[in-house]
Length: 109
Image 1 (cartoon, rainbow, N blue to C red):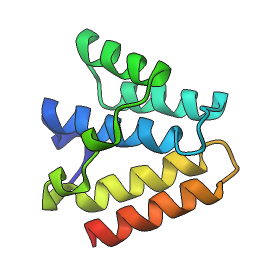
Image 2 (image 1 turned 90 degrees about the horizontal axis):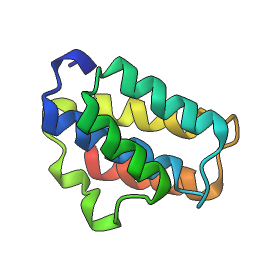
Image 3 (image 1 turned 90 degrees about the vertical axis):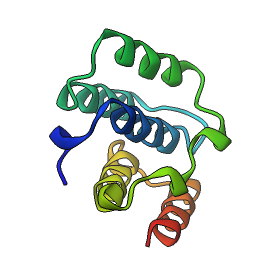
């Protein structure tokens, strides 16, 4: 599965995870913000989608909106890889980020 194969719903779901992981340590570093914006470009988000992601960079999605059980099985490997890339974006993986990634890995198998 590749980024290009994601439909609108899955693109936004992925970006919700990306932004949530960027917020895991309660701040978004400039490198993480740049990573999020590069992902937006790679996913070719439309204007409305990009606006939503920018809003999440200001105020993160609520935890109940980021449910690993909602990730389609065929996208799980892709979501895990992007989550790993997100937490590594600023060169500093915090304990919170490591813990969140471990939980995501367990839930997505």
